[in-house]
Length: 186
Image (tube, rainbow, N blue to C red):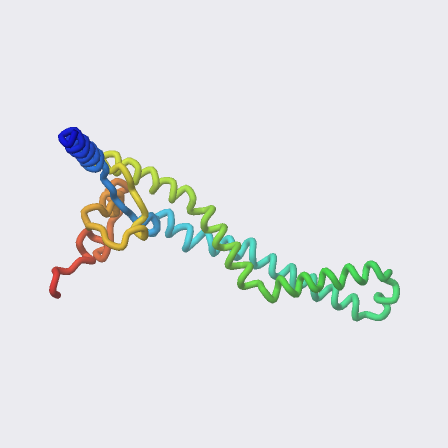
């Protein structure tokens, strides 16, 4: 009976050992790869500023001008007397809304710009994701996690250089494999 227990324990350890030897975990910071992509530079330097000029700035101008127009109508006694109370109330309500939008414009514009940035970069992230999947398959990684998931991980499991090569990107010197490591004791 004792031999049977030992045999079961040894068999379990062997199975667990062989299963764990098949797992290979790599990691990557997708944002670092996306930042290297030429498409990203185009989005950040050209498309987002154009979006701000063409879409956001006219919105702000509209809200300010509508606020001023309604304010001037409500201040003009000859117009004010002719307007029904419901219309005046609606105008006041609109003015409060416009004032709130204008006062919180920075926050609103930032949220809209971030959403537009995410929308414009979605194809770039998809391209990087596909490259990560290809590299993981080529190098027999069973799992690839974001670099932020690890406190400690060997540099050899960082897929940044391999994915950059797959996408034909040039890595800056600071991102080269081993660039961030120093020998122990230094």
